[in-house]
Length: 345
Image (spheres, rainbow, N blue to C red):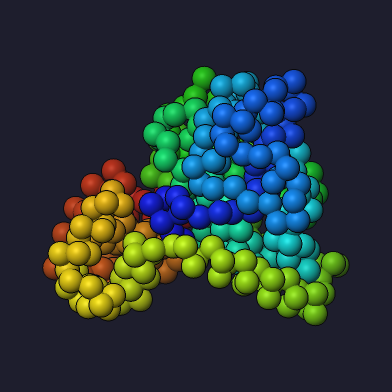
């Protein structure tokens, strides 16, 4: 689990995604300079040795870009990417020992690509499952939200095809939003069952490929890339504030979540001051705790065999009934149905 949009708004990110989408706009004859001007992005910054864009600039860019693009654009842009389009992050994938190692590397350093979507990876019952969550502040049914998820899913599919061949077979794609008017594109692109109005956005395939050794593996170069990526993450996380700190504390102390007074003490801050700062950021301790509980509940259901009672204890619920009620409120599914749906499709 990485940081939420609230954490990410004031940070500068590498502009790989912006450049990829700008090239897509240019190919379609869109005036990219005008789009960049409206978004407050200097084109010269995108070709500098260390290009950077802010959360708000990327958000504006997606908003204006979707006005100029037809529904197939996100898929086309994602399926057109090459691993080298992502700089050192892409190089790190190539240097990894196996495909499984490459996936772990990609997830660990995904923030280097920018705050478009968050991706988590799990292996369950011989399935490799990627979970996607849009980070930019768009409504779930907005075209911009669909664009973000479509681009990320098709980018992953492009990387999988580069790794395994163009005939790679996906098992299933699930999406949280309603079936869009261009639903036929989803079936055409992914070639597998695509389910809408589901609790989470996922893409899954057989895990049998993951142990294959990469012929481009190089442990020495990989360490150099890791050192570089760690330095870049330090620059990003240096700007992430109180909310990320609270999430980290909560995730580290399940079964007894620290209350707001304990968290305020860890920050050398009065609880009233902490509440005020969270309010300014548009959140609260209760909202953060709920988000962490939901995140961990899904993680435990997908990645472990823990019973509902055991998960309830870990998440500090009074009993399993309270946990099931909360989970139904979060996802509109009972925990057992959710676990069965993800694993069995």
